[in-house]
Length: 206
Image (cartoon, rainbow, N blue to C red):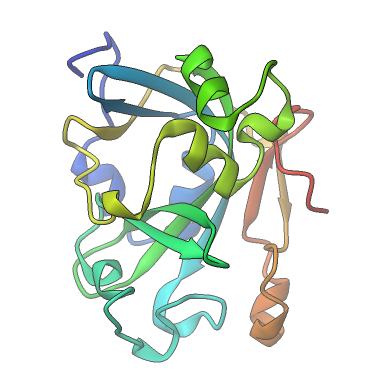
């Protein structure tokens, strides 16, 4: 059990699943939690995207690319990959599969659950609305996640994902192409973006 919750963390075995698309779907309904300086925030995962490593033109690791930024992608599943997009947005990804297989799941949107007052303050907002956590950069800001957390162990005590037994039926999941990867050719059309139907916090991208 987690230090601040009665719910179990996802174990290492969950992240070692070799099927990144399956992991991406199974993360829907799970709860991302952060605890920094004793401040807890949590949100239900309502949108994800799968990236299939060296064979996926949309992945940062396509073609076995290894850079200072992407090195963490080659770690065994169960750590996070946080990178800076457009020099502004900190994007939070879950690394999956075994060591040297750089699969990742981008967490694109959360439904806020706990520490909402803290999330609002971090985002400079007065009320709960989609732009609190309805996008990958927005949710990282609300949850206090930045590139300084790149490589964090997701079975540890600062960032983790837990199972609160929130039911998600396959009929509740919308599958579509990923966002902003037009450069990836045929891979851009793969239906590897997953959203919970009718959830008001999924990102507005079509």
